[in-house]
Length: 131
Ligand SMILES: [Zn+2]
Image 1 (spheres, rainbow, N blue to C red):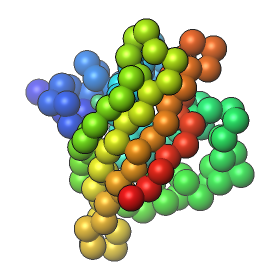
Image 2 (image 1 turned 120 degrees about the vertical axis):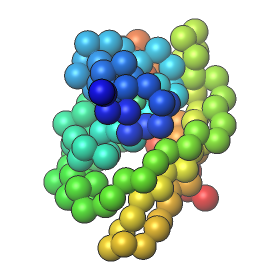
Image 3 (image 1 turned 90 degrees about the horizontal axis):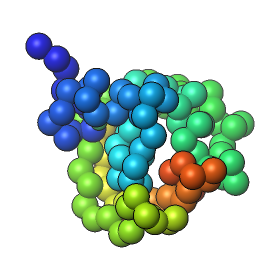
């Protein structure tokens, strides 16, 4: 039996975000990159979170605190609400999502519309607007 990927596609982790996070495969769409970043949050994989973040906005100084924060949460799931562009032929894409987690046992959510761009042909996270 294989563990389902934390991002909620229903696929197993090795068939979903694992190859993207490990660098065996590139994310073809902004949504795939978004999903892999959510999964990396659930594993507190700060290396991948930095690598998949645009160099223009990469929060290198916050690396440790992001890792600590991600580790202290219980990640409950991701829902993709809407996507705009971000396909294999696009240079820019937007993904609106909700990520649910427990902080000290209390349910919390992030509702964000994230902007993704291609950097050296690869999708990266640029910034997000919170709701
Ligand atoms: Zn996944």
